[in-house]
Amino acid sequence: MSTSLVPPHGGDLLNLMASPERADELKAQAREMPSWSLTARQVADLELLLNGAFSPLRGFMGRDDHEAVCRDLSLADGTFWPLPVTLDVSEQTGQSLAPGSALALRDVEGTLLAVLHVEEAWAADHEAEAIALCGTGDPGQPCAGRLLRETGAWYLGGRVEGVAAPHHYDFVERRASPAELRERFTRWGWRRIAAFHTREVMHRAEQELTFAAARDLEAALLVQLDVARTDYYDVSHYSRIRCAEALMKTYPHGTAALNLLPLARRGSGARDILLNAVVAQSYGCSHHLVRSAAPGADDELLGRADDALAIELVRTPERVYLPDRDAFVGTDAVPEGAATKVLTSEELEERLARGRELPSWFSFPEVVRELRRSAPPRSRQGFTVFFSGLPSSGKSTLANVLLVKLLEMGGRPVTLLDGDIVRQNLSSELGFSREHRNLNVARIGFVASEITKNGGIALCAPIAPYDAVRKQVRSMIEPVGGFLLVHVATPLGVCETRDRKGLYAKARAGIVKEFTGISDPYEEPKDAGMVIDTAERSPEECVQAILLHLEKEGYIGRPSREKE
Image (cartoon, rainbow, N blue to C red; front, side, top):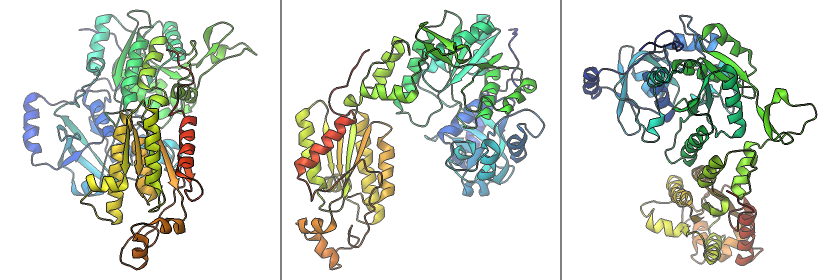
């Protein structure tokens, strides 16, 4: 079928999937090969290599290409390319593979996806890479150098042969390869196509921006929704896609399409924008919309695409709402002195968390309805209250009183995960070494995260003396619901007087080893949401303070205001 679409970068749309016969050969050979279990980001990179979105790359970059890209935005042969596409592995794996060897690339379940024919292996210099790509070597900055620290200190470069494309079970009809989408564009008669790349939920401002830009270009619109992710339980992933599907219905029929793109974010400003443009060109787009407020949008690096790519980068000013006109306009067209309205992402998140009304000008009813389904008010979300403190500090007492008060309120299931109860039923084989105590607390955190994720309330009352594992528990729970760390800061002397088991006395006598507060340290939390001293207040007073804090944060009580 003839086509008038722009050619892929480099001229040809590559397909790195092996033929069925060759795939069978590779599967047989892979039984004798060393294997590497790919991270979610690496799977996303591999998928775009295999389906040709990263044309003209035929595999993961070697050292010369990698250094040239970091330095000059081009491959070693001079072909324009904005960001490294490398396979980072552990030092042990990198040192064990010589040029000419092969490595089986597998997903987390062990499925063989591709074979890497190793051409180079070298130790990475992440700091120099971060400086080249992001202008900073600060490991705290979100940039490509930091992203590539996921696994290890070595890179592998070489040609890949695909055996099985990464499989997706969700929204399969929305996931098209460049070849598939090009065929659809040709069938639909689309020739001028403007790509808009986003990873966020789109509202009226973004819809107006893309609609106006495509209209002015006399082009159709392709929304490329970035869906590279790490967690299949990430509710926001599914919500973003459903919101995008609802939004697509607001465009005139036959003028816009949605595609799900597993392009892992590099965090390198203009270089990210340029990589998005390269991929959009592979998909057949003639224009790539660049938001004026995007990170790196004003970087002079964007000018490098003018002569290097067939796709045209088009600057699109942000849209703001003018109440007097009841309309969105570009920031470059706001009348002097005119009042404007915007709703930041932080304000949106807070309104959803509190169950407050969203202004009608901000979004579409169908999108708001989906957001409320996936992000209910805190008063309907699960949460965990995690008590930590010295033995006999009063943690279990407070947890039990809070349990009764929450059950009295009703509305959500409440589960108590007391340290002794968990020891008996979930961690009976564990001792009291630092490693085993951390493992016990991590198990409590995992159970609490599951309870929280499913809308329940978890009350945890372990000693949890070490800061690192408390932070680990927080990281498990906060993505799925609320988390309140309560430091029960009862003084050591008071705790000793309450000790009905005589463990403190045995610890001071050396009979009980590694006892928290005596022969083993308690690392006081610096990030506690509340600090309570049970020596100064009764259990009822302490729990009342906790309930008032939970009410203030919106986790109990009614939403302030809801409107669908």
